[in-house]
Amino acid sequence: MSKQKKNITEFRSYLLPVDFPVLLLSGDNWRISDRPRENLHFHNCLEIGFCHEGSGILQIRSHNHPFCAGDITFIARNIPHTTWSSKGNPSLWSYFMVDIGELFESFPPPLTLQINPLLDSLNTAGILHSSDHPELSFYVQRLISEAAEKNEHHQLYIRSLFLPVIIEFSRAFRSLEKQSSGSGSEAPEAQRTLVILPALEYIKLNYMTQFPMDSLADLCGLSPTHFRRVFYHTMGASPLEYLNTLRINQACRLLRSTEDSVLNISEAVGFHSVSSFNRLFTRLLATSPREYRRTSYNPSESGNRILKYNGWLQPEE
Image 1 (cartoon, rainbow, N blue to C red):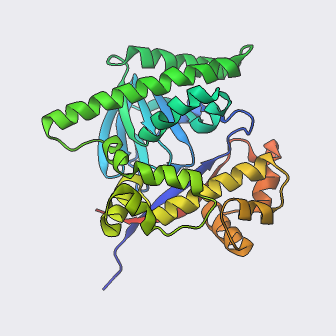
Image 2 (image 1 turned 90 degrees about the horizontal axis):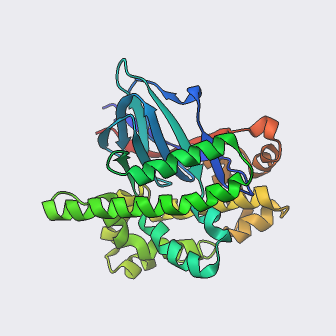
């Protein structure tokens, strides 16, 4: 009996600037093929997209969502998805790849205390149309213009614009959630995220320590089996996979922003063994920590390079 064919979910790690973690992907290179994609992918950061022209399909996990010109997409990190255009109607996009938590770190503490729960509730993915959300469309298009033109003080302007963008997305998804609940249809991803929010918060604050995975289930008031099922359905990964991905993401940040040794960084992000850290890092990013650091410091080699690995396997449906 032959083995069941599996689709591969690819991890794409974007090298965001250390001092300003925002990357604009725009221009004719971002015309999307009309060939349906076999493999999904997920990112190490938030993706916000704006469709300038054309139409097609955005697949989020196993669900297909049609899109057209004027649509705005929001894909939180670690959510498997892919996009393809309609036959004869190629789509043109601009994308922002951003570490939104890091971008808001410079905000004063009273404001970040309000922002953090907002960001936690936005572990979701979806499409919104400009005609239904004109303010959001305006802000996103202003962001694209500022990032492309790089006028004086553009970084400050972009940082300030992302706050109303996040608030508008939160309001829109919360409204969709209420509509879904009222109609009796399946709740969107954000509602399921609320169930595992205590676990996500605990992982975010304690990723550098060792703790049993079953303790996360207790935090959410779920049995270990049900917790793992809900967590995987929401995040597209097991709790341990998600924890290790967060650790590697934090290690990437330290490799690019500090001169600490690989050993010290591996310990700082929660690995007891540097060999285990090197092995997982290389498997996830297809490069060693030392090589990652070297190319990150060399823009001519790294540029807007996307590091991939053939990661979490999911069977075809």
